[in-house]
Length: 145
Ligand SMILES: [Zn+2]
Image (cartoon, rainbow, N blue to C red):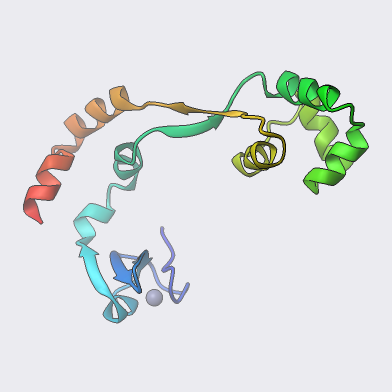
């Protein structure tokens, strides 16, 4: 069940454009904006994620890349953690490969040290499979509107 992003109380049944932001809202809150989608479309949220395009994930060898970068810069783990505003224990877990960093962490590494820890995964194959079972394609959706 999806919560209404405006009032947080009711179940979200609709997507509406409110002040240029697309929100999932309940029937009541949809009055404040322009309704974008009918409830039938909201029944298949997984399909929408696929259509959204490539997914960004953290690379497998993140630990090695981080360690190399840190040693390149001649920094201690303590310094590095402090610069990233992370707990030393968290940073140690990540650098030793025990904890996979999230996208936010990866973006911080990119911004501060120019180290890229993410890659894009194309999901074209999944898209075909999903639209077959769903009974309509993105093209159909555009035509209807
Ligand atoms: Zn609401």
